[in-house]
Image (cartoon, rainbow, N blue to C red; front, side, top):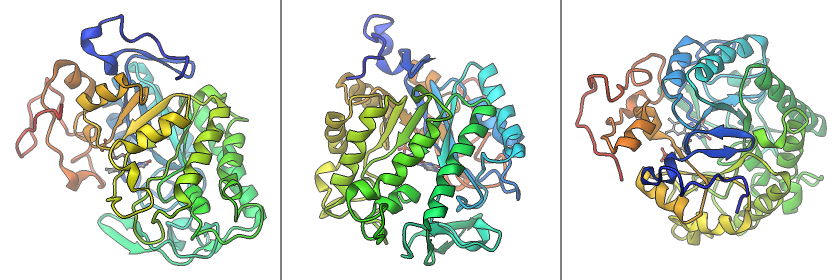
Length: 394
Ligand SMILES: Cc1cc2nc3c(=O)[nH]c(=O)nc-3n(C[C@H](O)[C@H](O)[C@H](O)COP(=O)(O)O)c2cc1C
């Protein structure tokens, strides 16, 4: 168990652990409610520069114990989702600075999720006439979001040369500096799901015969080399990793007999780095009949809790009531809420008062405007949204 926990049972116990402060690395968070990383496509400009609409959106959610930004690209080469922002140019730094300033003024904390999509992209998104790059030239067979409501299938990427691997590591180091200079409180490396690091770890997508392919240690090497580059910029107390065995179980991302040992290797090794957190996902896809079926439901939390002794942030389909139980069982230290944070800017107050949640409007998850983005009311504002108000999922 992490030593950096404050004793949540003594103070204000009736509010539950979820609303108790916690020491996160060296940051004092007022509660354990985290806003999960959420791509919202509100940065449709060529330079992927964060804007005032995003500033309003994040500021509205500053009462979260911690905000994790939407996935944010570390370079042009890393791009792979239309309308998502970057954190590698001066313009992007300025845009984020206005956002982190506002979040801090409102009493919040915010880290950036560093993102490289690898093969989940196309030439147009990458730009400069370049192809998406990945571990090997294998089509991951996933959808790429190329516009509002527009997707296309991935193509065969180019395999990274050793120089391009070094460039990727340098890009993460550079983006980490820009993030620091933009006023973020830390970073989280997106190490899971279908993105670059998972492409290297996934045996069927990594056919390399050099030191980045073959054994588990080799397939996970890029993640740890990037982590060490990020740690040249930030102290470990401000760095986290999102990792684990959960994938969409479609196309090139289906679990194999190597999936669990690979994720176990990553978690065991992450123990050595004394990071601010590791973010662990419950399953999103149906795991029945897969080699990781035993990780269904909370199985994945029990399994990886045993392997990882630092601060765990748990996510996917966890209601506040269930989150409270998971914290009490010691399965994690923080709970991240995704969709609940889209619809409830004042989620912490609603949890505190046991109030209703706003109804979700999924049609606004991805879009260009304030609609479905900054127009979800707080409890003190009149509800303008249509549909029935749902009760908090306690
Ligand atoms: C609209 C949307 C965008 C998302 N974007 C990201 C992202 O940029 N990075 C990431 O790691 N996860 C992303 N996710 C996954 C969420 O962080 C979270 O895991 C998911 O919503 C499940 O948590 P929940 O059940 O609390 O909603 C996204 C999910 C949604 C619904």
